[in-house]
Image 1 (cartoon, rainbow, N blue to C red):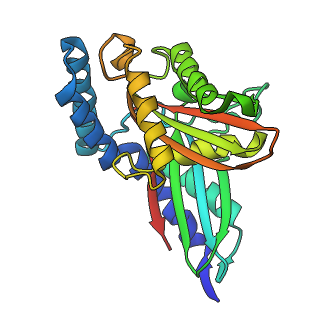
Image 2 (image 1 turned 60 degrees about the vertical axis):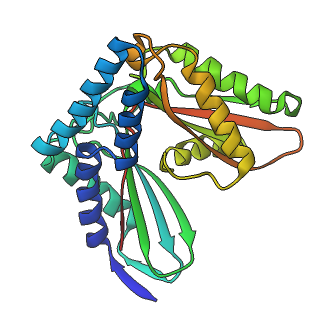
Length: 279
C-alpha cells in the first residue's frame, strides 16, 4: 500500500487546470495544421491560420486559449494499492478552486441550475473516479466549454437502426449544431452501455489522441467514414464554409442490452483541452 497525500492531489489538479487552459494538446494542433494545408477554400484557410496563431499566442503569453475556460471535468484513475490520505473529492475541489483563482481563469459554474448564483471559484468539478490496478493515481483535467457542450445530444436508438442509425444521428447532431460549437469540431461518440453510461463514453472518447490509431478495425473504419461525411456538410471553420468542419471522430463502445442501442455525441470545439499527470 502506497500513501498519496490529498494535498499533492490538490496541487496537481491546480497545475493541470492552468496547463489545460493555456496549452492546446499537440495532437489537436497537428490536426489543425494538417487541415490548413489541405483546405482549398481561402476564407476557411485564413480562419484556420487564425486558430493556429491563437494557440501559439496562448502558449507564448500564458493566456487562455479560449475565454470560456469551461467546467473542470476531472478523471481520476485510482490504483487499488494506493491509499489517499485525506478526501479525494475535497482535494479535487480545492485544486480546481486554486487553479482557476490563482490562474486568473474565468469562473463559470453556478451552484444551482435554476437559481444561477456563481460559486466564484469554478467549483464543484465534475469528478469521474475509477479503480484500477497498481499504486498510482492518474489525474486528467479536461475543461469543457459550454458552446460545444450545449450542442451535444443523446438518443436511445432501437437495435434495428444499427450502424446506419448511429451515422444518421451523428450527422443530424452536427447539422443542428451548425456554427454554434465554433467548428472545426472534434466529436466524441459513445455507443452502447445504457442511458447514463453512454454519455460518459462519449466524453471519454474526446480524450483519445487524434493521431492515435484505433485498434478495432471496425470502429477505425466507422470513425473515418463519419469524419468524411461530417466534412462533406460544408459547414467549415466557424460555420463560414469549407472542407474543415471536423478535425476528428473518436468512438468508445461498450456492451449493451439486447433491446437497446444508446448513442451519445459529445461535441467539442477545436479547443479540446486536457492535461494529465500521474502521482
